Image (cartoon, rainbow, N blue to C red; front, side, top):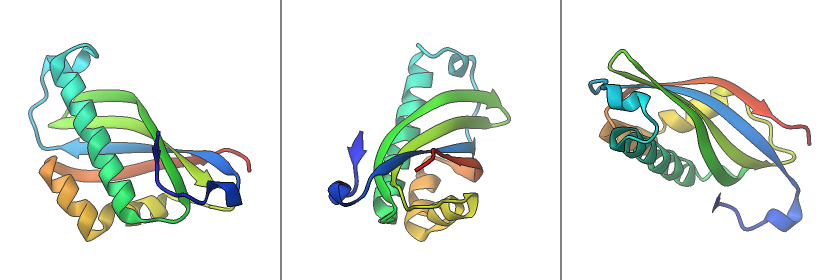
Length: 131
C-alpha cells in the first residue's frame, strides 16, 4: 500500500475500484498472455509505477492511499491493457469517471503516460464501497 495522506485519523476510508483500459503503442507478443513471463511482469510493473506516480502527483485530497492494481488482461491491438486500480478514499469522497479522466488528462500525467507510449486512457467505471 502506498499512503498518500497523513490525515487518516480524521475520517474513515472506503475502497474505490477504478476499472481502466489503456491503449499502448507497442507490439503485442504472446508473452503478455503468460503472467509468469518477463514481458508480462515488466509491463504490469511499469503500469503500476506510472499509476502511482500519476496518483501522487495529482495531489487529490480525496485519495488516502493507493492499494493495488489487479485483474490485468492484455489483448492485441497494439497492446490493450485492462485492469482494476484499487485505492482507498475518504468516506465523504465521491468519484465519478470524469474525476479520474481529469486526473489522467493533467499535464503531469500526460508526460508520464507518453513515456509508456500510451495512446489513450479510458476510465470504464468507478465502484465505491458504501461509507
